[in-house]
Image (cartoon, rainbow over all chains, first blue to last red):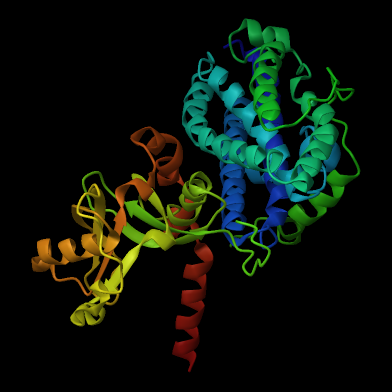
Length: 255
Length: 188
């Protein structure tokens, strides 16, 4: 790989990891509060998986930047402020109701599976290897959240109303997943990452059919107003304040 | 849940979860989950029961189809009379037979038997597998099982094997607490 592309590729991976970390931390708020005990455990477990994936992507970014892969993930997670995070805004929104969180996780899981299927052929071998591994687990996540979307969409009037409300709110935010990353054309030409337009086409095909089969109407929005991953809502600083509190109290602490 | 106007239980139905730790090993009961339907039960069971123990397959079975008898209950043969006799022409269906071999153990798979009713299956199981002598018997229809498939292993049961939370060394606090306690004992 051309050394000049390394920083851009690292930023791409950090953005991906930030999406996973912030979504997982947000959804971990359901721990102890989910509608039933069994799903409480299952959903928390799924969040742990995502945090594990984020750690792996941060490590690959560390390798590209010549940073220490042992300490870099914690450094990124706990010692950056909101303006330095690169996650999309969808993942930082409050948990809302169960329909909102479950639909958000589904929209993200569907994206992850499509993304990983293409990263498997990345010319940066470590990315291809990690994608191959993580994709298997994401297939399970997607099966889980697909099942919930289907049942809530076709459940009672109330569950369908809540799902439609969640979809109307989340849809424009979800489309930010497909905003062009920095230096996209160079990274795509080098065979390192897939083109965002191709991802969007595949994602739309995948989620639209499932959402419609689940009795939901797709909002008319075609493109997100949100383009920059450097811009965040007021919800991110609050989330970070909690997530980073202990690590910042005792930097380098071990527990 | 059926709405019969007198809803008394708002819980979802209960499913028994059985797990296989290696191909060829018997399935073993490891707990129950509440779920809206068998597919959800199978998905939830993956997160609850296979985080640490190794699994290559899981079954979920509605708890109310499991017909169960302890040794004590079998002593009195009147249980056979509690149920209406089955028509000779009723077709036999396959039933799984499970047994519990000690107070601490979980029910594990013993075999399979054809029978016309759960009671007939129990009777046949007790005769056929008498030599296994479990403390408790379970029988349930094979068709009541919703099972994972071999294709599910890669996405549902293998990823967990690489998780750092399975490693004792990932919990330094446990070691630290042990050292602190040992140190206190010395001081005492």
